[in-house]
Length: 325
Image 1: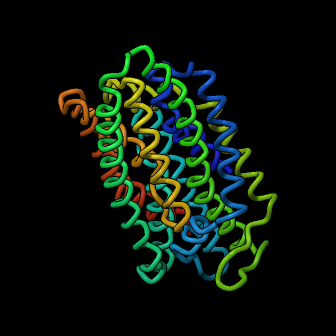
Image 2: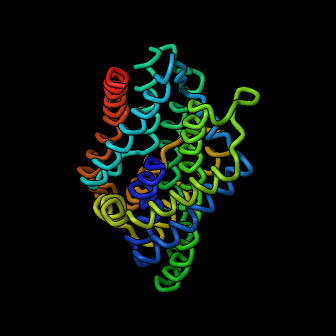
Image 3: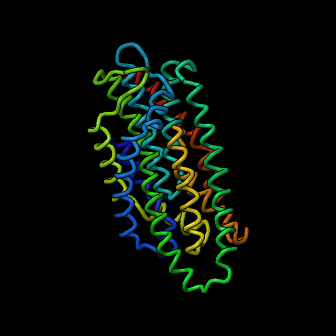
């Protein structure tokens, strides 16, 4: 549950960062909306389509002798929390999804080598990286250009009113779909934990997620969201690019559409990666110089380092834990 809580604490603020930076929503109101919509997204989407959770639960195998399975899985979760808290402390919007996948993979390889990795499910991760980058960045850019074209002769006050309302709605959608994506990922991990402790079984090669798991994970993520906030909001919504309301709306809409279709097809994508690239696209559509590329460089470096960094931490923690326990 600590992993679910930390995801809500450090990752969910990305969903409402643009609405705060454009002053459509006050920080306290935005975080309240994020809490509610993250809860609803995680619960509702999982009830109707749990393919993302299924992908995560099948991405690696922790089969091992004795209690080695539980120890290796525990090491992976410990590594994920460590990485996430460190990134939050420095205000870097590193991807919790990438950390989750890297942590699970590193610990599973410590237990069972390369054979513990399900290559078929891992391909979905690669696809997710491409999808989140191309559609996030491209969507943010294209939607912003279309809005500029349509509203170029509209009175600025009128346009601001339209996009104030529009961004409030798109921020809610973004928070809902953050819950839908990330909530399911961590439900998949929760089911792995129950399975390797002998508390649930598999049916047809997968899990049926009980309603109490959906509610527990959704509530925990919501509570985590209420604790976290402004550090990540500042990096994503304020430092990287100064957005106007129509750009914030474009970024939220692009990211929300990408997350929605990814969730439907069971592709685990990073909500942070998707939202941040959408913000880059929306900012670059006005002019390239409006984006602070040094901030972008730091974010990209954090994303690149997450897979090997968190994976190695999980690998060595799993080896250490198995040697001790």
